[in-house]
Image (cartoon, rainbow, N blue to C red; front, side):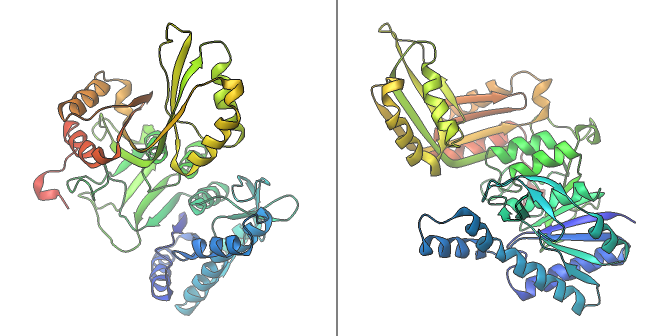
Length: 419
């Protein structure tokens, strides 16, 4: 007998017929002799609808009440799935975030999970009941409902799996696994059977939309084996496996290991340049400290060589949705920073090459730069980590860059295997 957490996203729960499909998938795991907990998202589009109600009620809404409203979508789907399971003979009940409870921080709308009390849940599973848990929500020490931020149901599922010591956490989505890149851009992209936590964390952070970044980080920290697979198809690889496993590096043998695992792209970036910033100690701190205090994430940073005048240009990227706030903050800090002009550009995209093989192989970055150069794609900024190289380019060249890099690193599937 295995313990499995099954998580279903909004597209999987979008209407009664799809909820019945989910119930049948859960029933199959129960009939295989497994103990099952299910974490569900709200129906597709429901959270956006509820957010719209909050904004319509008041542009300056109370985040505590916002959480009460937007968490209700998951409450509906958890109850409906429990009903659908009961209708096909599977004992099930729903468990809201406060009934477990799932303890979180008090950062409403972006809370973080601390601990989960699983005694009652474990007793229910031992009695043969399926537990249906609404994702995305938790409870503060003051007994106020919280939400975990968009995509937070992935994190809920991994946290529940860690707390109940599950053998695996299955994340059901509208794709059948993790691919070497977006197959809508590269039809010959290949589905990966296994990906390391580190690679998936990098891919998620640089634009891959398969899993929420926080959920991957939590899975890596807690050692939760995660599988990504489709709610709608049962595609299997040559070994009969479904989906993609996210696991520790020790589970991937040398035969399966590749130099480059995947290529991701992200068009939700904006480039900001401050010109003629005084070249003195502390100047850069005046730029990035107020941005950090406002919770704005800065990614790529370039400080040019100082001019003969004793000043320098500083370029960095922020999420496109945060650009207006960043401009406002930097405008108010112009005096302490001392820059001349603030320039910004939203017509940019970030392209990233990810793979643990970079640790032991030289020339990965050189291949990227040479390949883009051959196609006359200009690189505006570069950032690296131990297993990632990212560049900033003009957004109109995104698809071309992804295609040529996918081929350059030998990631294309054979013609007969292409989707």
